[in-house]
Image 1 (cartoon, helix red, strand yellow):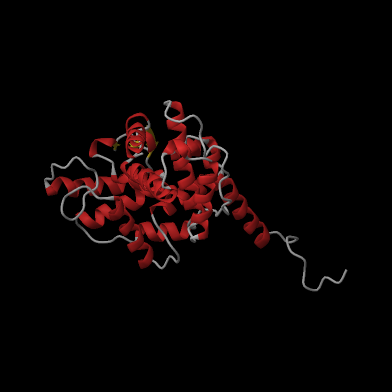
Image 2: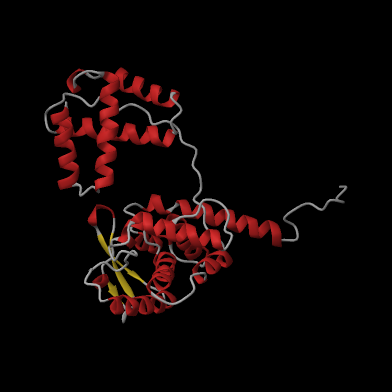
Amino acid sequence: MNDHIDKFIKHLELERAASAHTLRSYRKDLEEFFQYVKTKPEDIDIIDVRGFIAEQIKSGLKKSTVGRRLASIRSFFKFLHREGYQKTNPAKFVSNPKVSKLLPRFLSIDDIFSLIEKPEGIGLIPARDKSVLELLYSSGLRVSELSGLNIDDINIKEGLVKVRGKGKKERIVPVGSKAIDALKSYIVEKILLKSKNKALFLNRAGARLSDRGVRRIVVKYARMVGVAGQIGPHTMRHTFASHLLQAGADLRVIQELLGHSSLSTTQKYTHLDITHLMDVYDKAHPFAKEEDNDVS
């Protein structure tokens, strides 16, 4: 069984270019599944898979987590079947647990401007923090995409950034003038540091800024300006997409900018936009609500 898992993980790494985090998640999901069924892959049937999923839901796990584990099991058996190790895929017809779809949160224009303008002072760290916030909102990057940037990925003159997204797919994304100005100031500070590190963003020790480091920057300034709720780098990405859509940007253009492989992933922002439009309508239209003294 462990040999099959190792082969599957190797397949994901080499042929699907899965990240280290994704590989760890797949392995953990499969190990938990086999701890439950306590049998060889070839002896597993649909009842075993359904039993595992039911047990996961009963234990109180989020349905989104259970759905991810089912997806891992389904992919694993699909691989075994394709490679000739398994006659059938016992997880193929197991239904995903229904998950209530939560719309991603995004910030208002006033809140995002307050957040971005908050880093103050001179030196590498304030300049870096402002550049991080500006670039997240300007270009809608994932946290891993931003932390993975190298100095050569930024084209200051053309206002472009080369991004390595999921599956190591590269795309070119425009960078706004405000973000370019912030990056110019930061790069000067980085040059003065005489660092030979090729990473664009550095931590206080002079090493590449991690995903966690980026999150800490966003959370720190969100708290400083009083933005309530859970705010992180992904909130900046949602805000980028939502503001573009509200301004009339085409959904397929937003898809390209975000690096989504499927338009259906981008379409969730249409729901956000409709929510925003309905809110504006209710507040602004004279006939949006019935008058309290309407006696007809």
